[in-house]
Structures are given as C-alpha cells and as structure tokens.
Image (tube, rainbow, N blue to C red; front, side, top):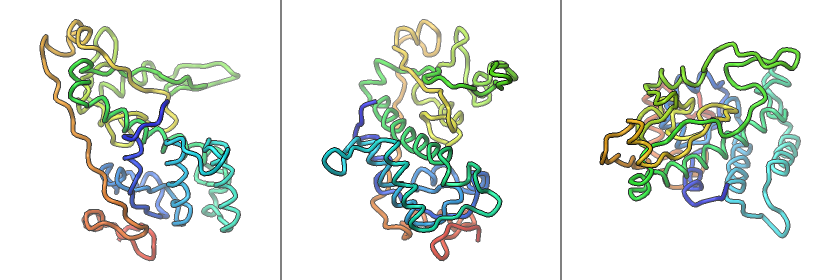
Length: 276
C-alpha cells in the first residue's frame, strides 16, 4: 500500500501514555476517542519504549529511510525494539513472561507493528473515502476479507484441519453493530455508524480487530442503488474526520486530554496512566 499524508496525520502529535493497565481495563475506562489521540499500549509503562514505537511506526507508514540504505521494514524495526528492551533491562510483569503481554516476544511486537500501522493507513483511507467528490462516486463500502488467516475468527484448527465453530462470525458482528445484508453481502454507506460500532478500536475504518484480515472495498453508486443500500440519487454525506492535536511532548498532556482523563477517573501520575 502506498504511503500517504492522511495516514501520517493520524500519528503525528499523539500524546504518549505509559501505563501498567491491561488491555481489558483500558478498553473499559479509556474511550476510543481518547485512545485515538494518544499512543497507549497495554502494560507498556516505559516512556522511552513508547517514544521509539511512535517514531518507528511513522517510519513504517511513511516508507522514509533514516539513512542511506536504511529503509524501515517490520524485521528491522522489531530488531531495533529488542535492542532497546535489552538496553533498558526491560522485564515483563511477573507471571506474564513469554505471553502476548511480554514485549520481548515476536508475537507482541508483531501485533504492535501490525495494529499501529494498519490503524494509521485505515485512517488515511477513511479520509480519502470521505472526500466529497469520492463519496459521490463511491458512496458505500463492503466488508470483505482482504488478507488470508490460517485460523480465521469463528474457526479452530485441529490436527491441521480447519473447523468452523461459529457460522458466519463476521455477519453476526455486522448485524450486532447495526449493519444490514444485501444479497448476503455486508454493505453500508461510507459514513454509516456501523463501521465504528463494528470496530474493536472504536474507529470507522480497518482494522476492525487485532490480527483481523477483514477490510473494505468501495462500492460504486450504480451498484449501491441496484442493491438497495441507498435510494436512487441519494447523496451520502461525508463524515468529517476528527482533528488530531498539536504535538504534545510526553508525558505532558494537552488540557483536553488531561481534563478528559480526570473526568474518567484516570490520572497521569509519576509518568504512568493510572486509575485515580
């Protein structure tokens, strides 16, 4: 996928919030609108780790080299992160060694790289799809599988055999998010609330969950009208992307973020995001 400025705008200027809280608690206490304005990773409490991750994710999304012949790629970024962890004597939380919570594992590092880069690129697509001229021609999107997965959601693997344990997993999530099916296809207008409700991250664009291979494709006006997703001649209003804050040096917060955290019973104390 080609880098584009809209994707980078989702990354520049994020506040970095070190925290000892796990993902479940962050999901419960920190609304998506705030998570979109900050880099906060479950059980990552060192500011220097977040700083490095933030810089390298921007390099991955932009495709810009840091020197002659030094182009960012997931393998080199992962190696650099491991070197940083060694240099600061990083230790995972006791009892979580070798799990997905442990930053020393390839599984966790790959998850961070995959999620953060795809969220940025998804935001860039979202901005482009909501361009007034673009949405006039392509007013709808279809949820489709864009990447294969060895074991997709709704399946388990036994003796290298794929077994479906939940039929039409994504169609269920689609309906629960308020989506409708058209010829058994998951299609909705570009600015429909279903996209944000479908997302694990509370954003109106891919990725919709961790390690998900689901994405979207544009649906032209003629097809959308034929399927009954929109009425003939209907204008789908574009959704104005939220503005991201100006650069905020970590761990200092903008007044908006500080007040919002306080209203949620959270505080940044001694450089860590904690429940107050």
